[in-house]
Amino acid sequence: MDNNFKEGYDFENHWNNAYQKTPVNKLGWYEKESTPSLELIALCNLSKNAQIFNAGAGASILIEQLLNEGYSNLVVNDISSSALIELKNNLENHKNSQVQFIVDDLTNPTELLKLKDVDLWHDRAVLHFFTTQQQQNSYFNLLKKVVKPKGHVILAEFNLEGAKKCSGLDVFNYNEKMLHERLGEDFELLKSFNYTYTQPSGGLREYVYTLFQRKN
Image (tube, rainbow, N blue to C red; front, side, top):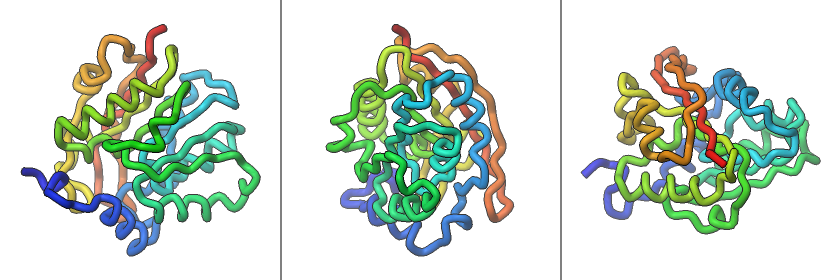
């Protein structure tokens, strides 16, 4: 049994500890600029009031960058309340922005079930931590429940040549075909590319970035 699904394993505590013990800019997934994500978001041609959902956002710089670009309807999720507190503190220049923060588990959602009409679902480095069929099914069921027709999905995960562990946890590696199969025929693959991310430590992580659109 993989160590991501040990009986009684506390994922909330795991990620809270990660953000409490290490400065955000030293975490292995920290980005100074979310360039690949922003490039894919630009291809979506979203209105500035489109509902953008960031799954497992942590303290991502992407939220500030989207606010800087004028997007005004952001929903930010993480299982770690510590991560979202850190993110709020990093948005000092956007105190009056309407950002909705939701602490919830993507694989056992409660508050997230209230979401609807999502224009863009964005996930960088979250799905690959869900290593069991049950976790993956819950994730994709939620995605399909909340993303509207013609809505977009960005999934950026460790690719097949990528790391097999991260933050002490096993990961499940993907390519664009595997992601498309999980989303199903209702989604069209618009763009995909492999991307080498350089960690703050200098280590390299191989990702696959994908952009899908739900059919009408």
